[in-house]
Image (cartoon, rainbow, N blue to C red; front, top):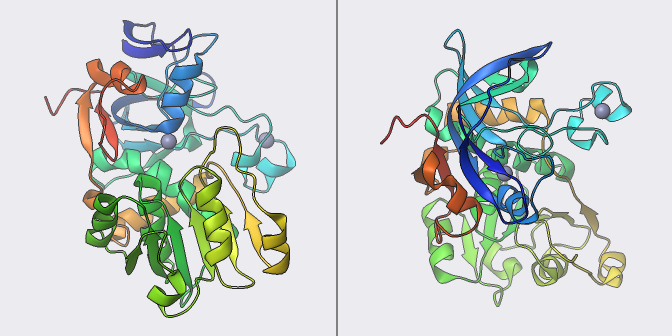
Length: 321
Ligand SMILES: [Zn+2]
Ligand SMILES: [Zn+2]
């Protein structure tokens, strides 16, 4: 089968790879489409030994034709986190596309429970369910409800998916973003308020946001959110930040803040993402997306292609060429 393989740091190649048969409890998926995100680019930059097929945002068909989306966080199934249904916290989790081979290949084998049926959804949008599931998981740690005011810092694809997820939970959402183009995009996609970091969310929203999701890396966006949420507010550190993001503990202390974090999602979050997309509450088709053939995936992974695109999906099957 054709597959993209990451080996030495800074290498990603399209190769002819062996297609392994499904193991016990696994199903085989004929991959149709897969998304590429920062996690995949970081894997390509640091390399993989043994070599790895990336792609944790995949969709395709089972042998019987059932359309499925892949939930990538595969837990051990035995530890306290897995038994509580929080496989994304499992210390021994083996995530599809990171710790085991992923969806940038014509075939993929995953545990049956992680191939989630997605009948009725446009398969080209199904790679977006994984990042949406991560947003839903993050929101579950914030306890967002109807009537909340929320602040999203950063209008990249994750920030915009969080915006829709917060709105679906009943919140009024302000999106803060430095670039005017991205601010305009957030407004077009339905942000209740857009602002640049020089503006005050409380003034724009009418009251200080009770929750914030920081979907931009670095200390500055996190520190800004900690300063701008309401006293007693809750802030999710959602962006991965190379080198860390030190913040002033006094701000947390004197403003009575709760800082939370999470990474990945559970199968339950993935199913909720599917249902929100299917009902139209989260309008995934409106997220700007560019699609490339599998041949271009290595260049995208290595940052040599796809600049400026908000979200890139890979047409693995070659149907749209
Ligand atoms: Zn991702
Ligand atoms: Zn576990």
